[in-house]
Each structure stands twice: as C-alpha cells, then as structure tokens.
Amino acid sequence: MFAHLKEDLKAVFERDPAVRNVFEIVLCYPGFHALLFYRLAHGLWVHKFYLAGRFVSHLGRFFTGIEIHPGACIGKGFFIDHGMGVVIGETAEIGDNCTLYHQVTLGGTSWAKEKRHPTLGNNVVVGSGAKILGPFTVGDNAKVGSNSVVVKEVPPNATVVGVPGRVVMLGEKAVGVDLQHGNLPDPVAKAVGCMMDQIHALETKVRELTAEQQELKRNLAERDNREVANG
Image (cartoon, rainbow, N blue to C red; front, side):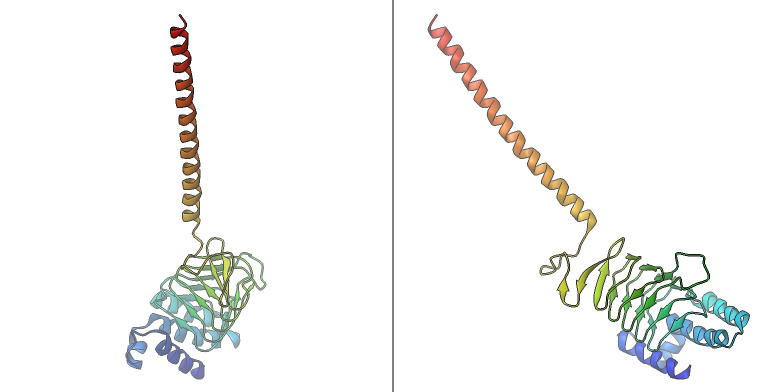
C-alpha cells in the first residue's frame, strides 16, 4: 500500500506542472486524497471486510467528489487530475501509470454479478468527461479524448475520440483522418461541409437554368423580330 502511495506521489510531480512540493499534494489534491481512501478501502475489501471497505470508500466520495469502488484494482503511479465527478466501478482494473481527468466514468452495462467494467492497460490517459462503458480492454499507451463514449475494445497505442468513440490514430499513423493539418473528425463540421457542398451544387444549377432562360428569351425575341419584319 505505502509503496503504491509513493508511486502515486511521484506521478503527481511528473504529470502536473502546477505542483510545487509534497505538502501541497497532501493538503490540496483531492485526487491524491481519493487514492488514500481507496488504498485503505481496497485493503479492507481484499481481507473480506466488505462493509468497512464500502464505508471508507463512501467517506472518500463525500470528502473528494471521487467515487472509487473498493473492489476495483488499481496499479501504481495512478493520477487523477482535478478529479471531481470521477466514477470507477467495482470490477474495473487499471494498470500502472494511468491518468484520469475530471468527470471520467469507468462504468458497466450489465447488472449481472460478473466482470462488467473496463480494464485499462498501462500508461492509459483518459480525457475529461469521457465514458468507458463495458467489460473490454483499453490497450497499453492508449488515449481517450475528452467527452468520448467508448463501448468497445481499444487497441494498444490508439487514440480514440467521438461519440461513439472511434480510433483516429494508431501510434503515429492517422486512421481515416487527415492529421497533417491538425484535422480531427468533427461530426458537426462534416455535416456543415456536406450542406455547403449541396448549396454550391444548387447555385451552379441556378446559374445554368438562368443562362438557359436568357438564351430562350433571346431566341423568342429574334423570332418575334423576324415575324414583324416579314409582315
């Protein structure tokens, strides 16, 4: 337990440039406080003191706004930045050196008493507001974008964004998007782009019809002139 807490302290220094010293972490970081409550609650849980574990977990939720079930398995070097609204379910598993931002949910999609929460590999980063729902694995070194909703397996080294979440990068390689100019998939921008294409097509059609109408008017005027000239 204490070895893990040492790694958790080290993780805060490595991943938060705002931190100045250990006392600031101990006194002012709710993510670290939540881990203190979790490590104690988990220790009670694995020794089958289930009620005591749940009560300590409940106290942690009350004081920090972060809910971590004592049955979850969390590795070393875990960092919750800001933290408010984070929820980690009972059967969730989190590897080493993972980072979660505020309002992240590692949730389930089943009421059955079985593995129903996600497994995060090592070095996973989950952006604020993201929801990872179901008993699948998010591979090592994966990144989940803010406000994404992930409901299926994520391969190692992948970057996932969107609702529902989809892979846009594998390692340094873009998947289905042009990242050369910093373009990530945006469904609103895509819909607006399609609408603009349709508007341009309609404008072209109107110009063509206007040109045809003017040509018909000229032909009719020339015919009328000929008829007048021929008496």
